[in-house]
Image (tube, rainbow, N blue to C red; front, side):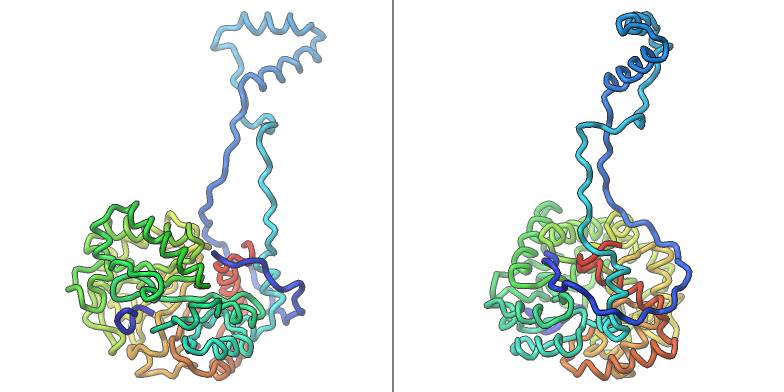
Length: 435
């Protein structure tokens, strides 16, 4: 979801003590996954401790007294002295890494029924003025996420979202668009956030701090996902579809500032989503109003795609998502927009080596898609193409969407193994399990 009307941590302890057995999909050969980037501490040993251990061993083997061994060691030239082996023994001072108490994502997926696995792949709009209705949608459908658009004040006050969380079989991703400028949700409650273009006049550290403060405000109100930052590279006039939502027309500037914004959200415990892949910044129009085109793929690689190249190489793929726009891209798409085209997801997975959650832009209220497809049709087409999450801002019955997806899963149009891996990524993004 990119924008809407003007002005428009992660999970706590799981409430589930056990899961009902679910129907398991036939096991398929494991596909290699791109490595997820994590930092690990490296222990460095004291050279003196290692040498002492070596000399003690010499004494045992030769029967020489310790002082004899030390004398022989002292007479060696530096070239003759044995260098310590950093892998020789564990550092007695190094504390062991604590065990991850979370279940594996595979085991969590196996405990879900096939229909509930499909439900995890839906993020649906709810009526912000009707907290009870939002809770009922979650209770009845077990959707993985809800989207709060427009004026969401009723759901963002008085702990109203607590009841929504309690209604689900698993914690629910609660998402908003809160980029700043024209696209923000809690300005009436917590103050305004500058637009991306205005933020780019600050330092990256100042933007990181702003995003962290905003993330803490969102988290305090029950929001867990922010569909931001916008990483489009654009020089459009400020009020155009992207316009001042873009940090800059310079890919390096976009990378620095979008990276700072994402880092601030992450430090606040809010999951950020980079958008709109493969690049909406030089589009011919607004995909809210109809089909739009952008430059050919080869041209996008020269500027619009560079922030993805740089950011996705640095970030932990379980801690950030990517949103795909509804764009016609020569050299990538043909009859369908990018959000419904398999080649888009292949590009993101294979060339950009992204193994995190990939979601669509709004499938229900944006005419680039809704002029041609019903919401169940669009959701099926997107998930079959390779999206993990189908997003819609519409408040519509969820059962018809799930019925359509269930038929596709039963017929093989949605592959069971692909479905399970998508759900693994979603549950990991919610911080519910370890992959």
